[in-house]
Image (cartoon, rainbow, N blue to C red; front, top):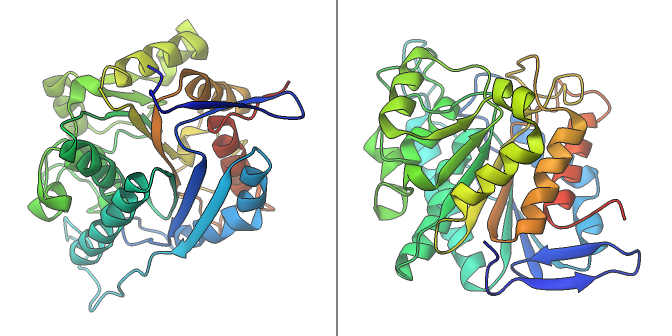
Length: 322
């Protein structure tokens, strides 16, 4: 689906940009409470070091960088057996983030959210869903990740909320997470596509089967090819009347290309497969928000993962080889 407001801009170097808004609004969310390892809170800074603002501008966009969301410091540390670690801090940050994303969309801008761990998707996508709900529209979703992110408190092996955001957006889990922005669920599973999974917990499998959520696992991508899988994923998300949100966890990428993640799983998307996926999204139109998460600077090598994260954003915004 191409959004009716999508504009097409031909650039001097020959590339074509398809975008739903001429202005991009960048917002960093330096939060690591949803993960179990320090360093992911520096992801937004690493993406900016890789010249994100300047390189988006070179594609013909106006760029506003709002800086980083102020994340509340925890009053106490969670217990090892806590099944919802840092729940209050994450819930508070997600409420703020949802409001900021809503503002960007109201202003006719394209929000680009920089994580931080993947728990922030509860807030960012809630903001998109809230904006669409006020207009009696539906929103789709394309979720890139090595993991399902569909645990709930009863199934989580770690208590880390970055393993729960997709379930929360679909209305499963703690009310403090499912009710961000004041309603639940945020998404219809029939309008969602998950790309790149290769490490799924038992409890997540049950929920996935119950909901009928479409997963394009790495095996299917290997067998059918990335182009065909992305065309189908985009078709699913494009059934929504208002387009779709995109969230990209860098652990979807192969660790050889993206070493800077705290949840590495071998056998991920290759450099070219990931670019192709983003290029397909740009060509299709309809993207309403974009998020890149889980870049851990303490594990990265010469900012390689952040550099690749910026490249993914540029491809999704329309950068092409010719």
